[in-house]
Image (cartoon, rainbow, N blue to C red):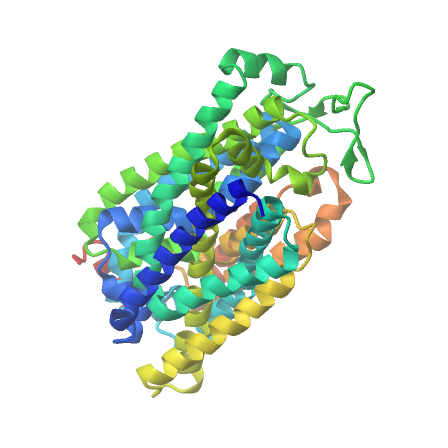
Length: 520
């Protein structure tokens, strides 16, 4: 191992050690009760709530997947995705946050998303609880897998180590500190990781622009690539066996400009719809100390999101100017952040910046594992099978679930050729379509019925699989990102079934009205 590699690994080990120390520090508080372990006793301040929500939401795809997309096919896909995500972030904090904080407290002091939806409709037979929990387990296993892929790619690219070994080692580190500290440790570490992520993105972008000769030089370079710097066209690398081809001078080859019309824009911007159903974000709304602090959190979260997304897209474009023929497959293109960091920064600083990828990955994977474990232990085990379960029993089942979900995530991540962005996009669609519509209708339409909520979740979650694996293969208009049609069909199902079934009981309607002004 070279001296530079040793400096990088020392910086990253210091960072990892600090995260594990946070887990140990909060272990005592977390283990006092399941409420503390799963939602931190609703004591998050506005800065921690905002930064931890965004850090846990963005994951490693922000530093690897999004720059990789911009590097591979240019501005349009990455830009419209970023616009959708920024808009979704703002609207979610503006519209959903305060109402959910109030309603979740009023509806039986719910501390998980499935528990809130179930309590909202005052169901005796916990059908909603079970369906919601199963979808969370399935999609968070996929999400955790995407994070473990990031670990494997990072350490494999940096040190030439075997992908599968370092991927599993990274998963073990995440499991360790999530296991110890629970939601409070996760949120505080996510706050720190959000800071590391945005500093890393801005630092790498700055040195990249300088190394490339400034913004005019970068623009001249990428404008020479057909479709690369267009909002309504897309670059198309010339491939042979999934590898981009080079000309005699070693310059990467691109085909004719691809069309990027209204349907493509709707498809990519629909990423923003996913926010309404993201459990890791919605849980922060529920966990903030006071609903009056959400306005401050909204501003912090939106500013962080816009800066980070802009920097990530710009890094991909700058990377293509700096290293035009370095990364010749779509999977490898997701290493552009790593290549720029190690190539342009002193070794120790590169290690600090690489910690930004660790920050993004760990801030997300710990959230996914914790929410998945709460879905089985609190919502299914205690909510359905053993209603008199003690806190100790709930915590034990939670930690067993955490390990099982992690194992499934590791299995998903074993394929070294996985494209992080594609893995994340499927899980994102799953959560957005399963929980987004039912959350919005539950919070803002009092005529929504329990049967309507069930129909919406089943339609949304099921359609993600059907559209992704069957309908999208028809091509053309059907190639749209599965989140959009699944979200729309879920909304339609909720409205139709709710109108066809009996009006909610008066107690449900009264609680709905009370939630509008409830102070907490």
